[in-house]
Length: 82
Image (tube, rainbow, N blue to C red):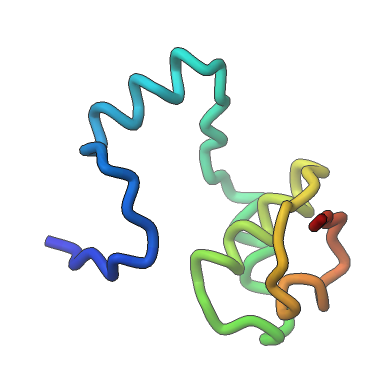
C-alpha cells in the first residue's frame, strides 16, 4: 500500500474521484513510450518523479502546465500561473 503524504486531501476515495473526473469530461492521459523517452532524457532540475512525468507529458502532448513550482518552470514547457 502506498502511504498518503496528506499533501492534498480530496475528501473522496479513488472511485469517487474517477466518477467525478468522468462526469466533468476530464481526459485521463495514458503514459506511453514517448512520455517515457522524454522522461528519461530530462535534466534533473526537478527531482520529484511525478512532477517529472507531468513535464514529460506536457512536452510530448504539447500541454500547458498550471504551476507555481519554479523547478518545473526551468524546463522547456509552456506554463502559466496567476
